Image (tube, rainbow, N blue to C red; front, top):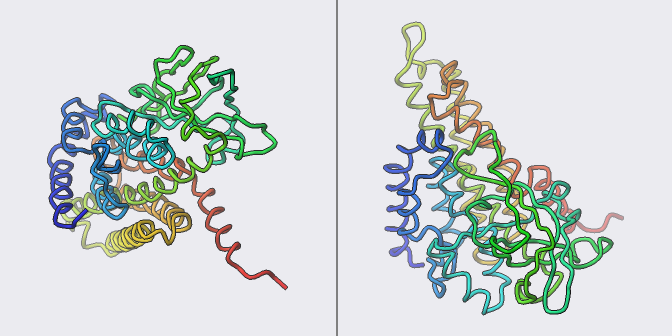
Length: 384
């Protein structure tokens, strides 16, 4: 998109987040729900389809533009972005990258408008960051597939219209090469969605278990209509998603710093403003430095993603650094607030709980370290 066209979109999102969503944070926290007025406004702004191609009704933003939006989304409750995150991200990108033309025409316009919500059903009780242990199976029976299994921690499952379901079509012995992905309408017979999970943080963003009991779908539901492509589809979506999550972490860190500066300059101890204490200043300086580094990393990685020079190593490095970074910034923010930072009435307490998930989902920090190390070792000369 031309920078002149993107600038007003970015400005509108920033104004909406800071003027409308931030003031609703307590409402979201208490109700564990995104107000309908915010959902409708997000749909009207095109936020359900910012990463979906223009020909299907989306905004078709580049990764560099998406990262800049994510900085703004990170400023407020993570549940707001999560509401439309699966449509643009890990679920929608499976169809963008791997769907047949018919599948794309059928589903992408609805995802872009927000009329359809998609969920990415990969994680299982024994297959999370490493999908090689996936046990859900899809057996071919004539012109259909029959799917049986269980998924866990699936974002937006209760609100979804379609599920992108990863299932094993090959033997367990061939590992990830035997994984395929299917489009399964949520109302299909045999699909059962469990209750909303009770989480530590990120209230307003619902996750649930999903059970598949001999769920029959037509063979045309196989994404790309090719078996064994599910792992590749998942990794392509997750690489993009990891970079997006890194940018969200930067946005949250910057919000935490603002809250910390405000508290330090308006509150005191012993007749002195907190901001005059050098140890408080040191925590602020460390947080600002790390957030700046995260922002620079995310923008550089996004440019490399857009030009195709690095779509694996840089996203993992960014996700690793930024998700760990925001945890440190959140911890310092609570410390700067003192006892008040442990109280539910202040934003930093909520963000402290919200931030913890970023080190877990879309690939844990440990998985990112393995990816980074493996890429480095592949590039290394053979030891003599």
